[in-house]
Length: 232
Image (cartoon, rainbow, N blue to C red; front, side, top):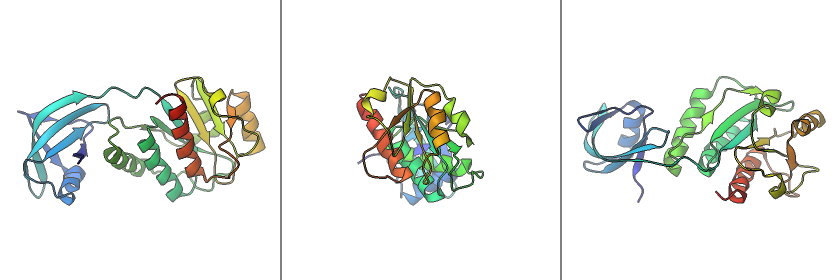
């Protein structure tokens, strides 16, 4: 059985003890943490501490350090540039992107986006943290503020892919190593102008088969296939 995980961006130990408070303390309480139970604390940057619960009260959980370790960074820098879509679809994409190992998430407004950007970065980060805990991803992916399509096209990457419903080629021939940037369009699809602009900026159009996939499905399947083909 895997250990419960606690995310603390800057954990502080005093005499090998750590005081876990607020949301992460409540997470442990809901999970019915017990005295002497081992728990993992991670900072989202590859540092992990195994601690043993000493006490859990109303306001904090106190734990004692048992060991620490450093997790090697991901071998592939995988960047998902995702058009703004319905809130539920976008948040599902965030969760699954963390699980498959996306290292950077770039939301952007496409011509046919059917959702306003809003200011949701705090909520998005909470979703990413919970997904990282569940999947034991010890590096949190970076989440950018919503940008324009042109700004998304300007992100530097060795592999530059636009997943498209029509006139796309095979994935394997479009791969050129890391970083790998892949674009996922909105539910209404890409416009002709967007496809042309991406082509002019060196993006290879790639198809995921004859079926028309939802945007969130394409983001998950596309990212997983890139990971597989690049040996990750």
